[in-house]
Image 1 (tube, helix red, strand yellow):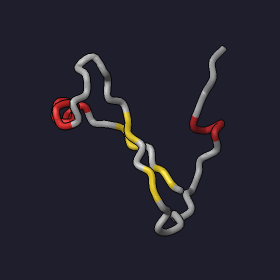
Image 2 (cartoon, one colour):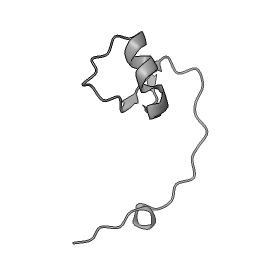
Image 3 (cartoon, helix red, strand yellow):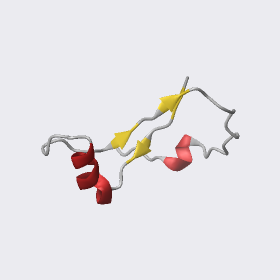
Length: 57
């Protein structure tokens, strides 16, 4: 089983709300389609977390 988190673009909120009868007080943030894995993903180059994120105390 595989999944992919997809963040929404606010431009499509109204259309999706109508299409799927989503209550107006809900906020569309993301979707996560899932299913069978058809092929293995390519390896990703990752930047060290210490370079990507800073914590200020």
